[in-house]
Length: 369
Image 1 (cartoon, helix red, strand yellow):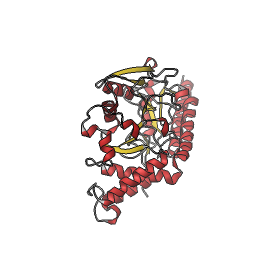
Image 2 (image 1 turned 90 degrees about the horizontal axis):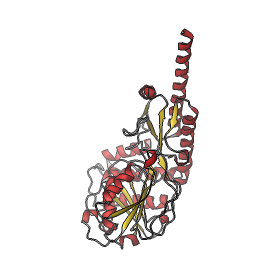
Image 3 (image 1 turned 90 degrees about the vertical axis):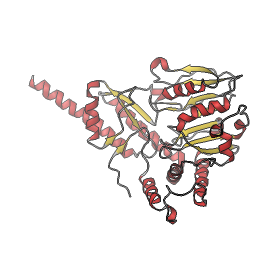
Image 4 (image 1 turned 45 degrees about the horizontal axis):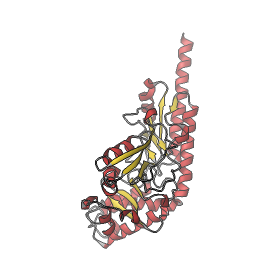
């Protein structure tokens, strides 16, 4: 087995289970004993068709996808979906409703405006996106309602979803497979793979077939969801390796007990780290406590001059990937599915030890005066 020598809190691409890395490495050398690498095989071979089928089946099983939905494996990341979904579903005679709750919501809104009108139903920009807006109304005549369930940069997460009669589209890139959701509440869910599914390169789309029947405009083939559905995500060469590793990762998740089991573990990890942030006098959390993300924990030091010192302190103990996003600063610890609670314990111990070390320095300085 691969030995983990670093505690990887990176926001994406992120940590993968050691077992998955070992199996993927074997397949790069010799896939299923056929004498070819997974990087070499044709996507039209029976061997890869079985990979596609198993990956689709695992998505349906783990997310409990009801009948009437299609599973698509696309390219271009979640960012391509910002324009693709508007191109397919935002018609000139209607507006789309968007919840503005962070950096990626803003990007999605910008792309949608290229194809039609947008009604921003609520925004948390007034407080630097440190909370999720509540108490807004969604226009009943909207083409669809779009929101981001977890905000990777700002460290907020939606744990309840507003009722509405319009089609609901959700960017779940950062929290898909991390907790249970009722897929039937959504007409379309999309997610970049590089958080909880696998390596970068593949994007998952779970779409209700009845929504696809509402597409009215001519859409280029490479941006038409129906083309991918009708061709089993094989209209062109798919991201073969990314899909294969996603399959391995979903197998691992199923073996662990599925989404309900990993949700329990993710809650425990988040509670542990937030408790230390709130307890430790050197640190403070950025997100409103009622909207704190379980996946991306954002925090800063009360003395900003100490932040690089703490990063170096943690890095010396094998903790990597905790530097905050450039527009936010401070720290961000991503607690994705494959991160063990033992790594969170290492980070918490680093914070605790850093506090003790600073107290010792302060005491020595006071005694020397």
